Image 1 (cartoon, rainbow, N blue to C red):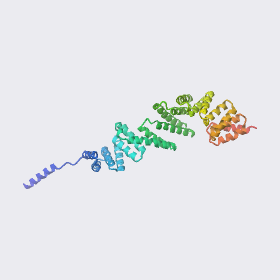
Image 2 (cartoon, rainbow, N blue to C red):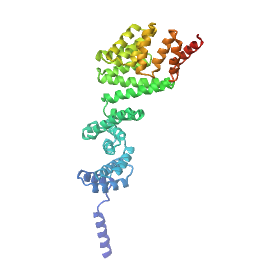
Image 3 (tube, rainbow, N blue to C red):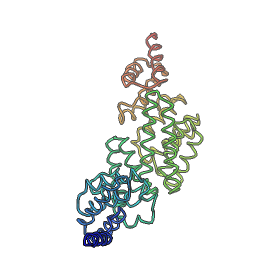
Image 4 (cartoon, rainbow, N blue to C red):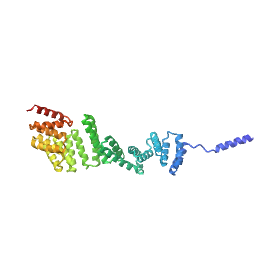
Length: 369
């Protein structure tokens, strides 16, 4: 009888024992501890939760938040990244990863995380002021990299800044400039296909700037330069004219318009624009070269020589000025003057067809008395 009573008592005691906490229990306790500012308790509860179910993204992210509250930054980053691999749509984790990355000076990581977070939950952006800090820092880093000709690095920073603020005209305009210069590099290397791809990308950047600010004349000018470089001269003229309607005293755009006219064989219009540019800036060597070429084409040889010599004084190693001057001398029958100028031109690794044209002139001069 006594044995039966003991067995009954044991059964009653077993029935009264508390149930083993589930992962949801630990998550709830960990979340409550976080809300109460008790990082140590939160970590204990959430480490247990992760141990029970390591593939549960919510547990990994909450543990990351707990580590962050305790100042255990690298552990927090590791847990957040683990949670995001399991669930990339967790906006809270993306925002916190952005905050961590700003603190660590990892600007690209911060911008990437914030951009993802804002896409998922734009309403929470206001609660994360470090986003604006990240945007400004990425823009400045891009500008510094661009100034040092570290163009690929600059592209990454500008794109990161634009992912957070698409209205950043400075970043978009700078991207266009970089891509245009990459196009020029490719073209000089003989890779026209790559060059055209970069010019197209630059054009899109400049168009985006104009859409944001139709009065931003530098973007109109650069769109004209892209059109000029891609042989769309009539469009280039139109764009340069639009830019000058906004800023009539822009000497560079005046020169570019003159160059476009010259390539369309509109010499009088070209002459006028070159002269206007030189009225604004008498030392603009490129405008002097353009005007010298107009004189050469119109066989005003004396004026061509005078103008081109002024240009060479300002830009001694200008292949364009040296070629035009050498050609002018040759057409004047002054081969003794043409030869040293064209030889100097040849030492500058000039582009075709000017290199071959110079060789033909030198060959002609070599056969002359």
